Length: 171
Length: 171
Image 1: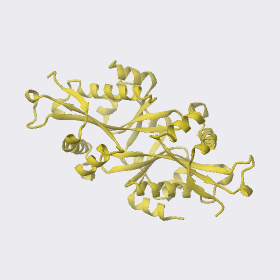
Image 2 (image 1 turned 135 degrees about the vertical axis):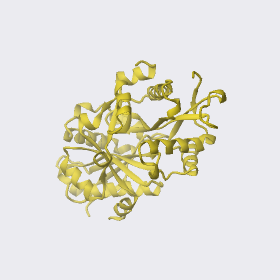
Image 3 (image 1 turned 90 degrees about the horizontal axis):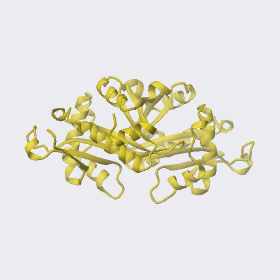
Image 4 (image 1 turned 45 degrees about the vertical axis):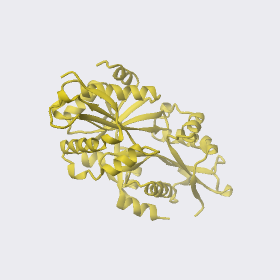
């Protein structure tokens, strides 16, 4: 299968983006964690101040393996900032449906994102990977990514809404 | 209370730059700081800022040994979780050593939480170095949890030559 195109996501892609987000979450055994709705994705990605950007991989009708789906891969990203080195591109999600792997679609998405990073004068692309996801870690390391948690000791911390409310109420 | 917490302005960039270097020195990596005061002014205070800042300021009579009244800062920006939606990322949190123990750090973090919640965010994320025990303890006390430890997520980076090769499609 040779034919696929990568393009910027449009509002009508939102149902497919949510479907792929859920598929990726299922792959990480976290499907019940997805609380995002199509309405959120539309408002947050296609309004005046987008919180994220998305590229999608589209296959023409004659190459569709899975009934009715032409959008078979996506990447969600946004720009962040490191006060030491400046702008960065943060890769939030990156997924190609299992039936379409092995055709270079993932590599092409990553190439497009890296190109976007370089064009926007980002000095680096950051993302997180679960340490149990050996296939993905190998994929990224083969392309020159380094593991900051292992190499430099960085740990990702989070405060969820309940504790965020408590913290914001303190004087 | 002896201090105020307020939004950073263009004029604060000189002190923010000073404190960024102090924080980098504390983390033992000050030679990695490439961003200048001018970069901060352009990247944080133009039409489409890449980050926002909060400053902790003390009155003139409580200024530091070297005469500074701006004694702490936090840098943050908005990100996006493909599972939960809008999130806020706290990139830096710093209080000058002689002003610690007065609740300034907590007040800065509380302000970031307030602003994040007001913008519709459901989580606050940040990274901490694994050897930074006093910071780890502080954050755990505020109700944060260690995503790297609990879910096994590693922070990854692709930069410099590796990023450029990736953009060109080299493997």
